[in-house]
Image (cartoon, rainbow, N blue to C red; front, side):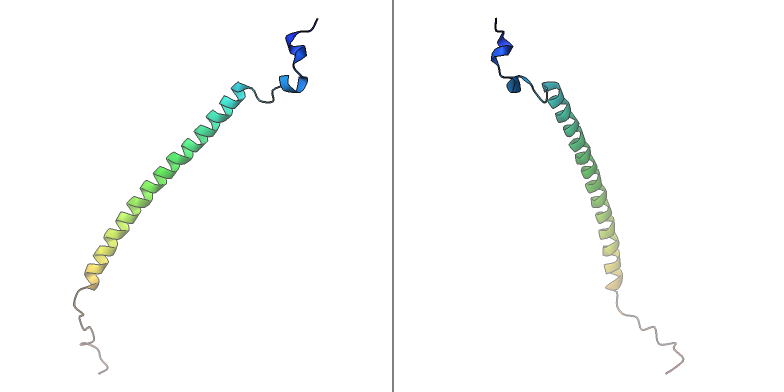
Length: 79
């Protein structure tokens, strides 16, 4: 008597990856990319904060460079 599994060829009845393994792989991949996304957002926030700080410093330096030139050679010994 032939059973139902005997009618299916052997190479079709053997699965290399089960559904549980697929779900596990997908969960691990999702978790990995979620961590990368969180680290990227954190790094972007830090870089934006640093950029704002440098822009403020640059604005202060521009204000100092716009001042009128003061001749500092008046007290020079060699004239």
